[in-house]
Amino acid sequence: MGSDASVTHMIFFIAAVLVAGSMAGVFLSVGYEMAKKIELESESMTEAMQSDIAIINDPAMMPYDGTSLTLYVENTGSSTLITSGLFVMMDGSYVNDTVLQLVGRSGAEWIPSTVLQITIDISLVPGDHNVKVITGDGEADSLTFRV
Amino acid sequence: MGLSVSAASAILFTTFVILFGIVFGSFDHFQDSLVNSQNEQTERYEQMMETSIAIVMVDDANDTMTIVNDGEAVVDLNEVMLLINGALVDRSVLNITVIGHESSKIWAPGESLLVQFPMDIDGARIKVTVKEWASAYHV
Image (tube, rainbow over all chains, first blue to last red; front, side, top):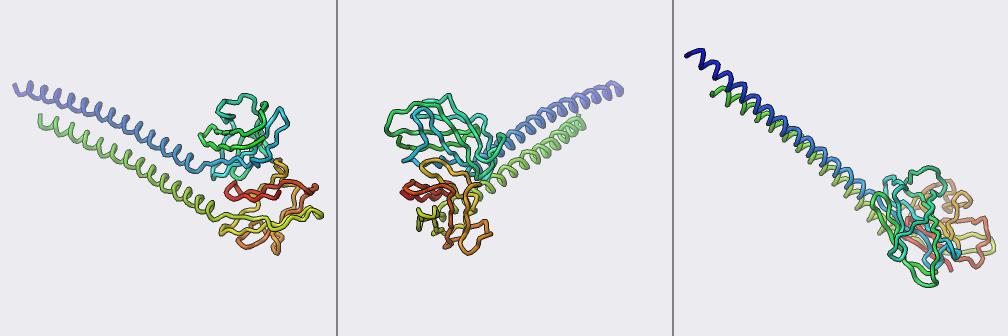
């Protein structure tokens, strides 16, 4: 009887420790995932708050030769942006033909206070237009201009 | 039976303490990053509000232009962009100096900037901009 009780107690003890251990493992992994997500969210919010761009063109005299338009976009934030993933909307429509070139720099790293030259192959009717530049990081700026 | 419950409770209690540490640490880091970014953004907005420039004189004969910093912010010369007839001028071909402080790379409030153009600017439309926070035009 005595040894039966000991065995039962031991089984209960092992079962309790195993169940508690498993639950602890699940809780810890969920907590770790949560912490990782919070950190990622924090990084992306920090990045977004430090990033800013501005189209510095002269709205009354755009470099437009009838077939291509040149935009100058400056990184006015404090973080380095990437040029890949950048897109342009002209009068609300997505523009396909864009050529990007960093002024005075090579590579794809767009450091603060440098200008990105965007050449767009587009035919515009004389009058007022609106262009919006959106970076891969989600920063955007728009300019209303006349050609 | 009592020992089993105690052991399980001890394991779970320890887990919750560790879990709290992990999650609290993350929240703390998140809050710190947010506050730092907000401060930086506020600083940038303040600088934006304090930046102002004006074209004082354009000398078509000598292709020079004088611009005054009439704001309250110190401007880095690398942040000054010039567009002539809509086209961005490559800064490496421009000679930009702060009058009275020729070797300086900063442009303090009240100081004037002398820009020497390598091309003819007679009749040209000129835009000067500092990060698009402050712009001045000469038509």
